[in-house]
Image 1 (cartoon, rainbow, N blue to C red):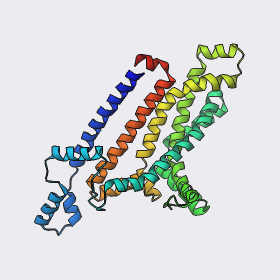
Image 2: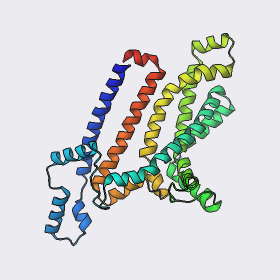
Image 3: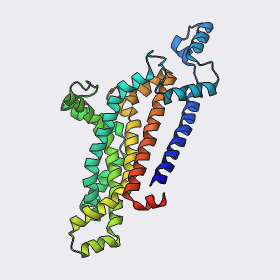
Length: 314
């Protein structure tokens, strides 16, 4: 198990190094000059040159990359060109919205996917299976931003059950959760559909194994066999999808946060791109990539704990 963990940690570090190189290179090739954008069209060339020198944009690319990477390793993400405040403070202010939103959506997705997947697997080939999988297929194909606007029109504008947008802060937890409910539902819908389909397929495959028939022959009921044996083994492939979904919910909520005017990381990234605030874009994207890789690492460890074969291979 120790060798397996060390191997996964080495893979995590290499992935982060490669990701940092790719992110830095992609940001640098984006056309446009941040200094010119900040000073406007009528700025003098010498003023632009002075600002570029102050921002460190005239330094060689390898030196700028090492300075940026070293700062991130020490928790110094630099200073925003636009807001004139440390990027770390901007991220800290926004992550208190994005992280609870992702967790909220993940809980909703699991709450829907687990019973739906179990029902579809137990009643496979029958009306409940066909109906739930049909709805799940629609959930996968339905764009979440369109579903988000539909939720706003029905539940916020017409019925006035939830706010249409904005975030009141965590001083009032009930109001904060209420403000995150509609965006969490919009994010959770496609993820719940994917999880339900994966769980159904894994359960059906598990229920056809010999040890399931042996458990039934020993006197266990069908529900006991499913919950004690089949469900645990069916969770192994589902864990991988679950980890990928959390990463997507954390990093892929840019459109949803803009639909609901939520001050999260997604909206911060969108604003930084439009304002050519490169240091913010680099830092936020790198942080999101780290979250994706770290969650994948934790999922791999959980996978190894659930499947002894991986520990032996490690």
